[in-house]
Length: 105
Image (cartoon, rainbow, N blue to C red):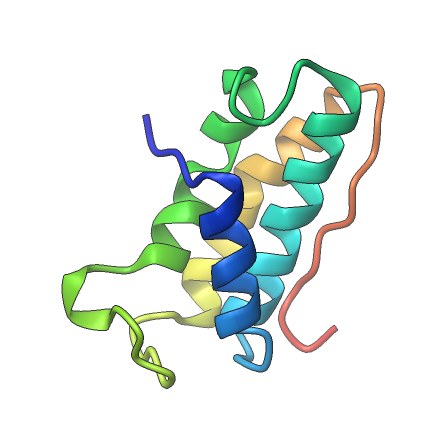
């Protein structure tokens, strides 16, 4: 199971806040984490939101060659759309809401 802890999410959000793809990705992941924390035992204890965000977390973390690369050419619009799809599906099945940020919005 892919799992970014709270510090990793906040750190990535700060690092990529101005990136056109990773900015929305990290804001969405933080929004999902906050909703999980507010509506369950917490992000680290409830596997469903983390599983729904697996592709999103993989996109954010990239591979070892992309760590701390401010450009991150590997982060594309198509990958963001694909990563958001299971997150959107998860949101439709839950009784609570969280914000999903898309590129350019």
